[in-house]
Image 1: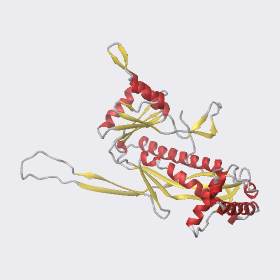
Image 2 (image 1 turned 30 degrees about the vertical axis):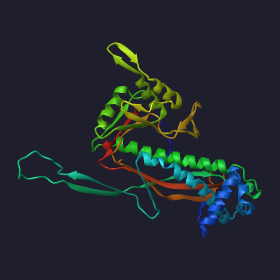
Image 3 (image 1 turned 135 degrees about the vertical axis):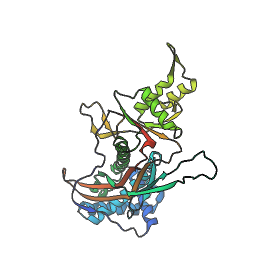
Image 4 (image 1 turned 120 degrees about the horizontal axis):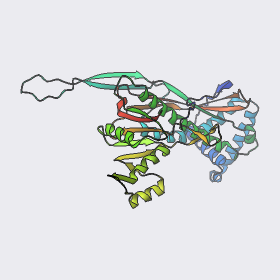
Length: 369
């Protein structure tokens, strides 16, 4: 299923106000966030004793003021929710470490890629005292543009003012974190695909196929190319990997097809749905959840966050040419939604990605036409 999802999403607000809360005592604020989190998630907030009552009173006061239009109170509430979401989001984004070289930089830093190639690297068999060529490095450095991944939620200030803390804040905060992470991964994979598909200047290990899954011949051919750079991992959606996994189950000798699943393979498939390896390559599933805000036109299901018919081939031991940047943490703002008129809180994170020019061949890809 190929999906056209807007990965770099935004939320249009009227008169948005950026939240900028100065935290004077980080330890005290951290404790407050922990207590708020316990209240919102229905955990054991009683262990905090009198501090819980003080925080509950503070939340009710902030909710009442925010309901009356106090932007400072909204900013304080948003800061609490932001620091509930941010640790989970940054932890989830560690998946970028697996996809490529993941860089976490400050807001005042510019994402840049620095790479090189060798010139005159030419070992020879020759007579003594003959001329020798010496290799030199040709350095290239260039900036990488970032894109903003956005999500949003509606905080019910009236519920907070009434002391109803076990409403929908915890559920919506979790959904914001999941949504932003999934859209971030989808954006990075989109950059990767475009870099490989549009590469016309350098060596290219990219091919397309027809049908629902690539053929065994196409997969084996890509493995042979990539294997010369190291042992290969194949990354993709469960739907494609499970089809590859099925190829482990037989061998054709002459006119006979011989099954040869071992008991260990059968047990592995029963437990995880996949064999871990095919033809010497690790099969690595990239989680591709449904986007519940995007039902299919025929209502038979939901769109996924990225295409489920693509396979990526990477060689182990090769420093990935895919660079991923996250600049700063989460920023928030609030304003009136232009469609509904409700007060929404918007959460943004900056992500950038690029495949190093000239090194596209280090990643192979098979994609549906």
